[in-house]
Image (cartoon, rainbow, N blue to C red):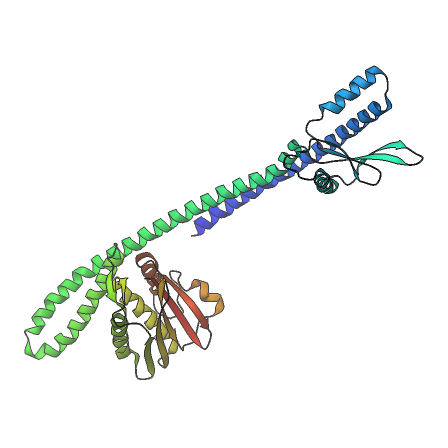
Length: 384
């Protein structure tokens, strides 16, 4: 995970450096182009002055060339009261129903771009003048927008790179989980088979019948654990399974181990034959993990409540306890491998449970709510 974070930080730093440099240089170019374009507009206005004054033919010829060469910079002429005169250049009027409204709207945009117009005084008394407002050319607009386009592209590549890294990391993690689970099942298989053989010999000894009976329970438990790891290390098959008997059986199993000071209750409004697509063995493992955590949180006294409800597209199962709860700062860690508040344990129970629900049952496992001193509720959401 640290390697993933390091790569992410390096990529972010490179992206910020590249985009920052591009934005700065684009702004520099935009300012330079804007300065040149104002000079060009000033020259264009001077050419208009020359044309109006009717100078010699050489000056008129040059002025006309300057005036007609402007095919990029949009310009609007107004009178001394900032009212459009109707003279404009390089403004698309296609689809405009009212030319005057269009020019006034454009004029507002040009004032934001270049608040100070270029003024051509027609006469001093009475005062009359033409003002020329102009907007950015196509080239200037492209230069101004270029860094944002590049930022979007850089962000896209960064997202792709991070997503690829996360997918690769998750794939490696899944392979590690599967490999560990298969190896655990394999390692358990041999001693369990040996114990089953010794158990059969004990059953033939009358004085050892009681011992054999208790050992048989433990061997079956070991076999169940081995089967669970074997299934999580492969792709388990889900099958239509009656949900309520599954929950009742697990509650019955856990009541025997909870003690008389712990109350366990199941509340629901479902039909008894309600079925979901489950892997019974693995789903039992999830319930067992959640109930064991609830028991540990209550220190031998309290209430555990399982509530089941049906929604249009899914079922949800809440496992609530009246235990010590989880601190707000630890909520985001509860499903991380190795996280545990207990003195003993590997901190893998909730991690495996989340994997079982989300990967194998296409559902969701989360902490629905938790409050220190009042308890915790885990919610399982399973699709119909």
